[in-house]
Length: 281
Ligand SMILES: NC(=O)c1ccc[n+]([C@@H]2O[C@H](COP(=O)([O-])OP(=O)(O)OC[C@H]3O[C@@H](n4cnc5c(N)ncnc54)[C@H](O)[C@@H]3O)[C@@H](O)[C@H]2O)c1
Image (tube, rainbow, N blue to C red; front, side, top):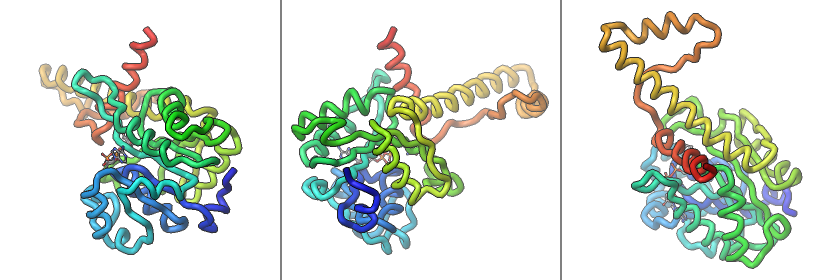
């Protein structure tokens, strides 16, 4: 099994697959301590990052230009990594059903370049079961290795808000989970090296997957309720904020407000949960 010291001493590398809002800040933070390979299938994105420009504005260009890491769209580079973190999109299709094609595509690609003792950590938002029941079997098929024996799965959801400079990767508690306590310990050491707020060890990958999807579902539903209330009160010429201020004096009234719901995943992620709920009847 690989250890955090192997990473720290640069005996092996860490790869991030998908360098968007989530993957890039993570890659840059790790690259300040470890040997990091940043992989994306989008060659334009790689060219842009090599030129030191991040159009998402999540990483300051000066910091990006200073960091020492490899940006590549050549999947062969993944062979050098013993830790591979997947942070690809999880959109919904036109029928509002989970579109797992980026997660499946990334897993297929990772599987083809997977070596023994690798740990593959997913950060994408999914419904409970995707990591172990969808991704694990793809990695096994493509690599010919056995999951939980030759390589291991981990899950650590990202909880950033795009554009929020207060709640960042470094300041938000990172939930970590894996297939066994040894790997969870490794994830804990790994993420603690970049997350000042520390980690929370979930008891299983499914618990961690479920935690992430309900965070956004709760926020989406509560803001939707406030929006409904504000429409009702507008019809009665009652000031909604005054109502919330009065109701908020009760100890267990939750302080949500009407408004737009952001970032872009809040309105999408709940469909991952409803998909699974409907599947279960
Ligand atoms: N954006 C947020 O604020 C945020 C916050 C928390 C969680 N998340 C979750 O994190 C995940 C990633 O979101 P994001 O906002 O970073 O997405 P994004 O669209 O910004 O970036 C994803 C990157 O992955 C690349 N990609 C797509 N398919 C790939 C593949 N097969 N192999 C390699 N690279 C591939 C794309 O080219 C893109 O650069 C999603 O599941 C999302 O729900 C996002």
